[in-house]
Image 1 (cartoon, rainbow, N blue to C red):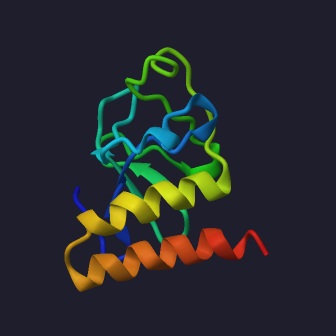
Image 2 (tube, helix red, strand yellow; image 1 turned 135 degrees about the vertical axis):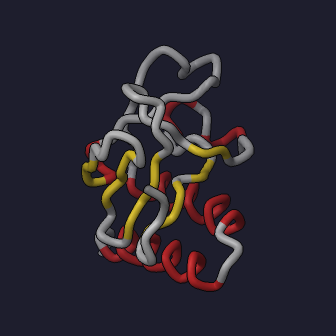
Amino acid sequence: MGLSSDEAWLCMPCPVASTGCLSNYQSASYWYHRYCEGKLKIDTSLDILCDDCGTAKDWKDWRFKCGNENHKFYEYPAEDLDFIHALGSAMSLKAHSPEKRRVVMKIINKISGSQC
């Protein structure tokens, strides 16, 4: 399926600070849907979508787990600011083209705007 002009692959460190993951400044990695192993992407309407099965939900409705020792068996939601930090610290670095940087900044600005 691939990316549309308003999407970017979800590439970031684990966004769950409560498990200590975010504070460890893990390297960024791509995220995959646990049910079908499809690559996840995020769009400018703040939905995270599976590229394989098409599952799509608002980013706040997703739960995350990673290989961190404190976090590899349970899924947790990400707080707004932690998610922004994870996106900003890694995903924008992976979005090399100006078009994808625009998409990432639009996503971060939308999430940030909901904090006001």
